[in-house]
Length: 169
Image (tube, rainbow, N blue to C red; front, side, top):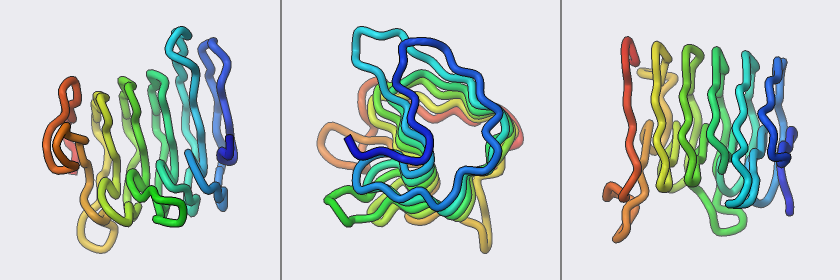
């Protein structure tokens, strides 16, 4: 499978001081980071810090995850989910059957050609605490968060939610 700059697919918990992940281009999933395990694995990741920018993928320009994850202090900027191979959702993050916590950091100036510039949630939960989600010249395009629905991308899918605990702009 075509995947991004950092690929993690083991069934163990991962802690990683990320550094900079940039210029990753993939035709499918996760231009910057790709986290995936099959449905029988109880995988999770705790990703600390990191500047994830200028990456591109069909789904999840910055990060694609099908794991539960915590992003602490991560910066997702200028990532693109493009329509090159039929996808175009989740410029910053694409969550698929995942519970993700984002504590600190930011998701700004990311683009989903169709929707979910900041994040696309498919049967997932994204909990955000004290994070910058853009505004003015750093806004995410098409919108900050899109929650996939059963009848279309504008509906709210069963089991999907977006929670902003404190000071999310």
